[in-house]
Amino acid sequence: MQPARAHAPGKLILFGEHAVVHHRPAIAVPLPAVQARAEAIPAEFGAGLTVHIPDANRTLRVTGELDREDPLYNALIYPLELALDALNEAIPDLEITIRSNIPVASGLGSGAALATALIRALALALGHPLSNDALNTLVYKVEKRHHGNPSGIDNTVIVYERPVYFVRGSPPAPFTLGAPLTLVVGDTGVNSPTHLAVADVARLYEREPDRIASIFDRIGEIACQARAAIEGGNIAALGPLMDENHALLRDLTVSSPELDALCAAARAAGASGAKLSGGGRGGNMIALVAPEAAPAVAEALRAAGATASFATTIG
Ligand code: PMV
Image 1 (cartoon, rainbow, N blue to C red):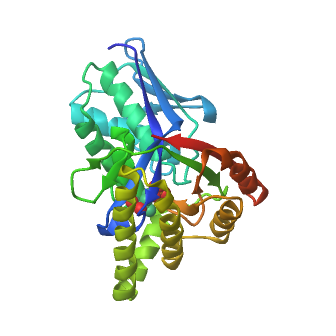
Image 2 (tube, rainbow, N blue to C red):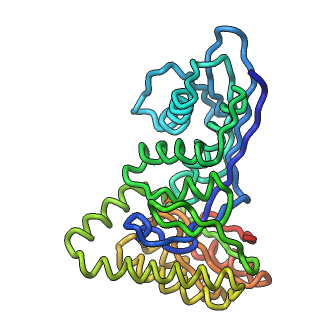
């Protein structure tokens, strides 16, 4: 056993959320401005495995029995149990401290980042560092437990820490940005569980297969066009694609009055496009801006009700 540290970034979905669950392409980028960090130190003989969460003022123990009622237990202990099982290791004598400044249930990948940082730190401490492929498989299993029917885009972009063009069931296709993107992220302050929105979209698809399939198809085309524009450094093309993607997400019923208001405020303050990012119904939105417009757009978002807003440059 040895001391180990690991971290994992948040993520932003730029294009294609929800349609990606139904096998259309989507684009996501890591968001290193927010991070989950895990630090493991060997504990005394017989102490077992404990997880300290200073932000929640709690300490949890890995006992081999999962407490399904406790969301923290499910988010933090389940990934460790899964990793121990995959590594064929008994419960070690180890203390892990986990910290994260990624807002929860808001579309920034908090759950996948926590699981990634925890499993990485555990595996390193045990002297069995995991490949990204092996780690990605484990974090996808964690996502499945929390979200029911995840596409796998969150764990993929967070584990590999690279921009990805993602199609469910295909190996992730990392790609490079032809020019940096400046985004302003605005938080509605409304927590919205992704699995409920995903289930509602699935029901809508069952009721109106043709109409919803053509929305998914158009979202997939937008992701494809956006990839070409991003790789080619044609940032100007992206704003209108974001606006159209947002309108289609509204048609899928996953926007909300708060998200629509923040997107409108961003556009009015000079953003070239804006859309919700992630599961929707709350959580975060993103606006594409010229770097010099970022402070004004961030301010306009707060004036329009965002509980937080910040600018970030990707690439
Ligand atoms: O976990 P979130 O809220 O960032 O949403 C992920 C994106 C969805 O397409 C809505 C779900 C999925 O599994 O791809």
